[in-house]
Length: 301
Image 1 (spheres, rainbow, N blue to C red):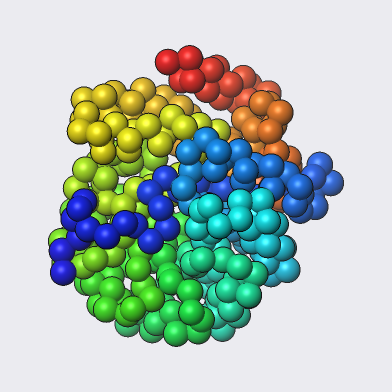
Image 2: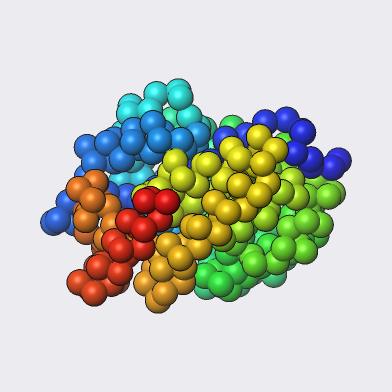
């Protein structure tokens, strides 16, 4: 079946934030901060939240912390928006266990990244995702980010996986726009831009929306890109996307991980972020100054 802009509503909303995991200065999980941040994101335009992804520092949070985070955010946002919990690891058995825990904690879906480091071939990759999809009642968002995992989820593998009733969405960080369009043309998978510079481009060819790191600090402004396009004003939507480019570049492509740049901005703005966990290090003073200047210029319009 063909995925079009007029098909059924996306399963997890359109404007999703890949939320950071707030920590205290001592490095402990800050659940009060998570509640506050989640509430702000929803009130300012996010209609879905993705927890414990790359931006959420999932490799350095425990299984118990992941479950506690889902529970706390659910308390904060209620049933207003879907919550997707990252459960992907390099171990299929562990990923299955995390998917079941996420379901018990109250998640609406799970984000499953390709197993990293071991670089499984496509048949093994497909078997991994199918086993996770069979393990709980939650729908899956596949996470294709080969620059981090070392393994691409090839378009043909995506197309086969789309036949599974619980494989419903993709977070696309492949930088393969042709491949994304092939899958859009041949499946009903909801395709979410995982790279902020692709928000409008992917949406315009039938994508579902975005899962954004930058939305942690400018949720309303990124939502406006989709809203303008939906209203039929493509030139305005394009200008909004272009206006976001300097901030996106500084936050995502200037040498520091998105988690670091987001937390630097949130902390500077008096919002919940806190420390990052090793091996990440906080942004230096010069980097923070540049981020703040770009943020202020962007929000000033």
